[in-house]
Image 1: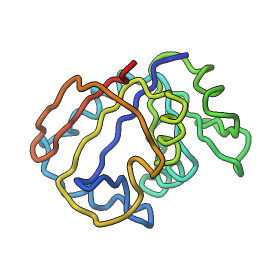
Image 2: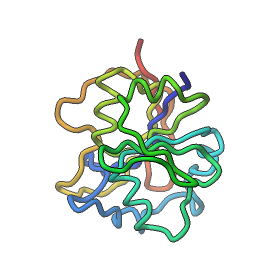
Image 3: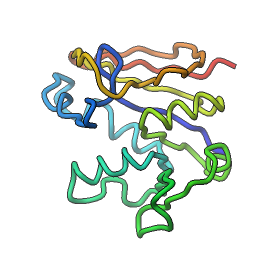
Image 4: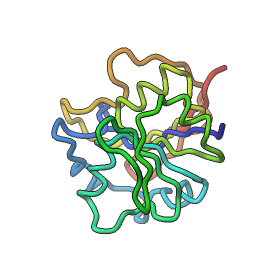
Length: 169
């Protein structure tokens, strides 16, 4: 099994998207003037794991699939098989991650994160805290999530605070 890493942006009040899944609130954030460290992180990733809702949102946001060239697994009970870029599966999350090597980026969403936490499957967590209060939406950690982490690093990137944690064993 590889190393699983959650790398995600969250609002100051802990939401990763609006109730309708929109992430438009990320568009005008003052960062470092470039990609705020995304490419450096992405270069460390061997494969991606995401829920169906996140996958569909990615397809809405761009014409070209942004993760071409990396193995991408999408958890879905309704979508089956594979495309040129994605493997769809409804296998249990621990079984999927046990088969994945290298660094696995757990892209989201909230239910995938909750299940990873329930099975103690997140090795590291990077949260880019965006200085906006949404007042509701899709929570980063849905109710019932529980885990303990140790702080590794904190970085100021413009108005963004990037927090890096490792799982507490």
